Image 1: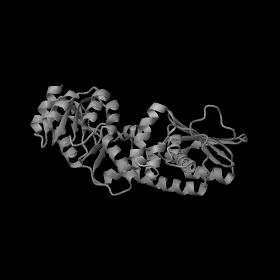
Image 2 (image 1 turned 120 degrees about the vertical axis):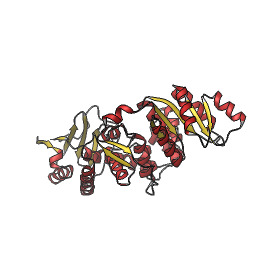
Image 3 (image 1 turned 90 degrees about the vertical axis):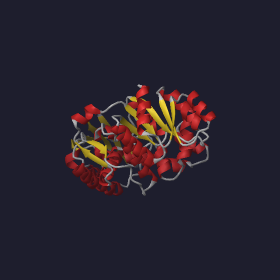
Image 4 (image 1 turned 60 degrees about the vertical axis):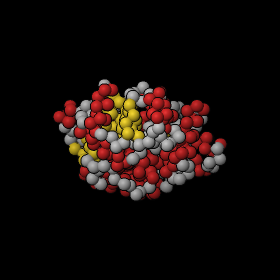
Length: 368
């Protein structure tokens, strides 16, 4: 049985795939970087992902990105999935939203993304072992039954593109220990919805304390996408990426989570809070804020909300039940009855916009 291995960073994934393709070799390719490992099977019909670190792009994200379902439909399905435990693909088929063929294509896209994620593993090692037996080994991962009818030439073209792109990224972000910091309010994004969503998540994680490596690890997007988004935001002038400052690290105060759908207001308020000595995490909705509560020592929450919204009070109740953190409401419109209901739902204070910076800082100090 023929086997070979080496340094993927030296050989290059595109060249390795070309070597396997030209030799028509069948077997298993194992790629590792530290504790991260992926195993691919090359068989007569195509490529299978036998095991991987994680699903690089969740199936629901692919379906939204390709316009197969809406974000609202995905939220509803995920909520139901928490109760039923069904697979998301089965649920969208049962609801009549997609055909089996469409779901199968999305699953193949997942496998392709897992392969392409290997381009962001700069120090990876590989080992290929030929195998005539094409049966899957025990312990194969959840995507192992998905067969990628691989056009190796197309994969190599994409491999070369991503390899060139990674070279550009590394010219600006040479090491993953650098720390991105916000230098300007969020820019408006005119690209596809998937790119706007990626930018919002990366900006949320780029709080001035997380390194590039930590952001890539915590992002729900593939590593390549996270690094490319950081690179793009740096070129837009929204982020600066540099060495961490020990003085800045030591001076950050209590962490506050600021939730507001109004981009300009959120950016201005976050700047005021940071000037007042607080470390600020930002989100446009409560649903997107869950990661910050799990990963940061959030001391308090500031919620900018309109009481014209039918779900305003339900959001307050969810914050109280999900986080058990003290929170302050900022609003432009609230009747006496709404104010009473908001306080009963768990809010410590309700402040009317425009909010005086000193008043907000005073109310935050009282929560400590």
